[in-house]
Image (cartoon, rainbow, N blue to C red; front, side):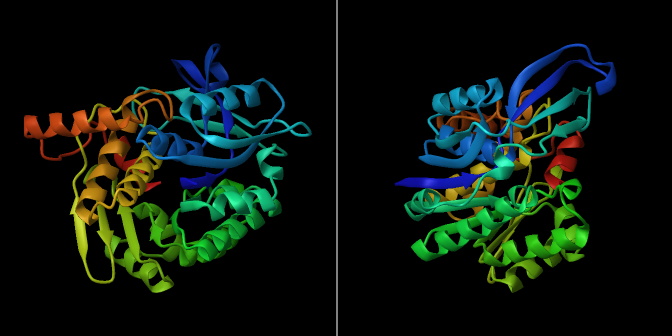
Length: 330
């Protein structure tokens, strides 16, 4: 029995050791990357039991992923000896969002198929988290995504959906919108950024994006607004949380931290305002370190950070740079 199941692609990541364009970089630091992995790690560090359905290659990148997952207490990752682990290059910047280049075609994750074993894992979970990345990788992963959601529905688990738009992975934007709108219609909690909502639904306001998702069938819609915080919408109520002021080091992973914070609070039975506050806090802390998941807090770190914010009387505010706004929007 697990609290949360998620699935996706774990990739090796090489982060530039110096500022500059990728063709000019000579040295890199090895890390791991993957939106769903970030959410899984965030939830595990907050004390939840997490399973991750995915595959890596039988190579040094895959071995590194298996080691990290074991250290984080997350089970479920498998090894496919017939395909490699994908990887990416990430630039170092002084401000704003870094450049990221992917090498993932034909990866072990893109070949991962739905199975009876996967159905058993989803069937024993309280919650399933889905993003719009995995269904874009291949026909197999798209089928996997919809089978997982159907399995969660059959067992009564709640489902969250973060669009995580990656237009470059799709044949065209029309197909992207069609598939991701269908997934949004199957989720209980939909977590788009404002720019994502506009790309999917043609709505430019949080209220408009939320109305479209609620009409599709979601019970709760949380629209991420970056430096302006986030707003939560149900059929009856709306609430807003301001962003936490932090010194932003790397914006990648902020939205994943936000999702982990929100899901964690919901699993703990927190109300709308408290869930939104935890989401904003974890999302902000995720930007304070270089790695995509290095800044994700433990439960103790999160509580201490919130207490420090309350003692200082900061009471919300804005991020140190506008780049945090951009990352939450996308």
